[in-house]
Image 1 (spheres, one colour):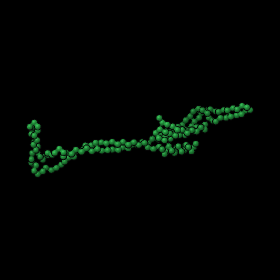
Image 2 (tube, one colour):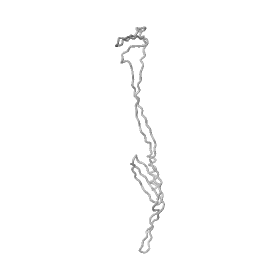
Image 3 (tube, rainbow, N blue to C red):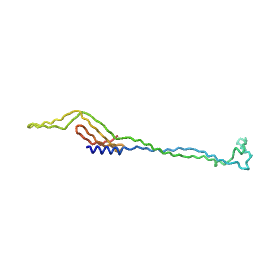
Image 4 (spheres, rainbow, N blue to C red):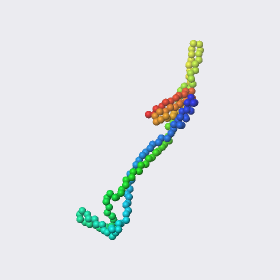
Length: 158
């Protein structure tokens, strides 16, 4: 009985590990890259004229503005992937103390001629119990009581 209790105690210590969960997330970030170029010699001092659909015109200096095809404007969308691992260590083994009222000792028999008398004594009984969780649902354990009763337990968590 003592050896079984020690084996279960050691198994529970070895089995009590970390519960880890992994979370993978992604974030989309837009970056705009500026294309910097110097003014070409033939455009120095030039004026850019923009004529709108309604016929109005506006003028801007070529040193401040440039006219480029739309495909040369770079907007980059980068996706950043992050991986988070969080662990929590929880002890899922159980130790319980118990007490109650019941049979304290075994049976006592006395013979008197042709008569046999069987007696038992009742009173307070104490005990201890230890359970080891094998996984999320199943457990095994041992229980001992002061009246000499020993038990092996198999449990299921619902």
